[in-house]
Length: 134
Image 1 (cartoon, rainbow, N blue to C red):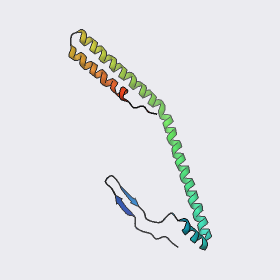
Image 2: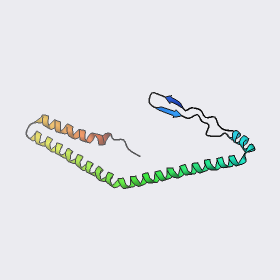
Image 3: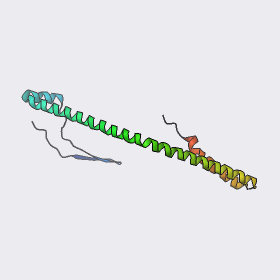
Image 4: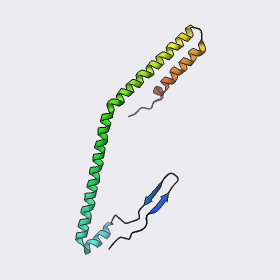
């Protein structure tokens, strides 16, 4: 009893297209009992191959997860280093803007002082509006 092979059908939507094969790969339990009554060795072989395939897929997924975790572990020191550098750089920019604002007020140039304070506020704003990551 061979499954009928049909042509793959293409489904298209606005965002993506996919090809689905309508070949009956998964055997229903009642079909399996019908086949088992005629050829028990075929059913045993089918179930063994299907189980081996599932185990192999699980192993490959676990290997992929382990490699991704190793990559993340290797990237963490660099991420910390660049995050620290970014914080120091933004702190220095804010200090420079506030010093420029104080200098502008001292010289009587209020428009430049307001501009420097606005730049300092813009530099601080992302930290104030950042969503907490759990």
